[in-house]
Image (cartoon, rainbow, N blue to C red; front, side):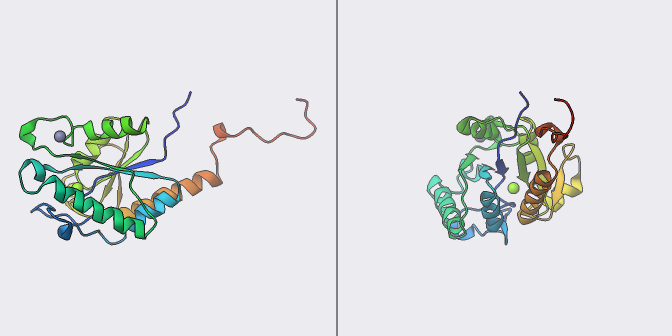
Length: 206
Ligand SMILES: [Mg+2]
Ligand SMILES: [Zn+2]
């Protein structure tokens, strides 16, 4: 049976949904959405996409903030999203530092595996959106399609190059969501021939 891609989108958090900082985002006060990012999530939801977040949060492992602060940041995000009619299904995060040698710190694919397992989906073909190379690397292990945004570390990532083959670049999450929804409506307008029986030809024998 051909694989049909589940309607999911996997997002990095810092630099994609909210403004990033080299000093880490340590509190809800520091968690500030990038303009248009929450609206983009709501628009994708509206089009039937379930959105999950996969985020390295080594600030926890480094002792820079507590789990309670992380929960408070996410509470802020959920509330702001809800005001726009949007939601994220789940947030998968890695609390470890590189020294922990865990299997979930991106570019390791553990967070993507967790998401696939939680929702019982095969993530092949699912878009993964990040501002760092390691976000994309974590996704392509399982066949996610890489999308780089220029927000956060995106410009620096783009300048370094060596992105996974097929990476698409978007100005920000809103630009990505517009691309995604346009792609879908184009596919609807011109369905792939394998998805449809050809119209019956009148007057021809069956
Ligand atoms: Mg990031
Ligand atoms: Zn980890």
